[in-house]
Amino acid sequence: MNNGRRKLIEIVITMLSALLDVYEQRDKTYMIEVISQAISKVSAIYGDEEDSYNNIPENLQGSERAYAMEEALDNLEEASLALEDALCILEMDEGDIEDAMDNVFGAIECLNGATA
Image (cartoon, rainbow, N blue to C red; front, top):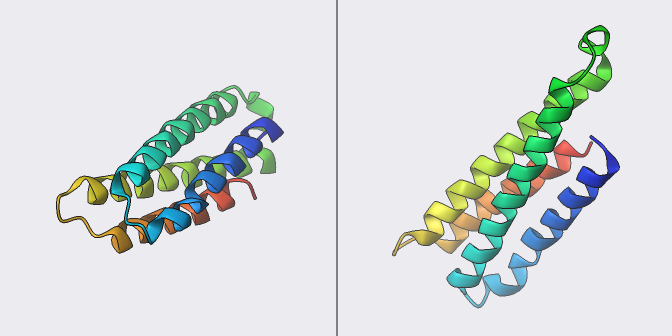
C-alpha cells in the first residue's frame, strides 16, 4: 500500500473516531452521514489497492509485497462490511447505537490492520 492510500485510511480512521464525540448526543443522522462517507472512501481505497495488486508483475506475485497487499485488501473489505452493518443498524428505527459503534470500532481495527 502506498503512502497516499495510508494517508486516506488515517483520514477515515480520524472521521470514524470523531463519532465518539457525537455518540453521547445520539445524533443518528450525523453518524449515518459520517459512516456513509467512510464507506465511500474505503471503497475507493480498496479499488485503488486492488488495481495495484492486479498489476503486480508475474515474477513478484508470490512476494511479501503481494502478500501484504492481499492482507490489506482483506482488511479493507472487512472494514467496509463492518461499516455497512453499522449503517444498517443506524438506519433501522429501533437500531441500537451501541451495536453500530461496536461495528465502527471493528472497522477501525481492520483499517489499522490494512496499513500495517
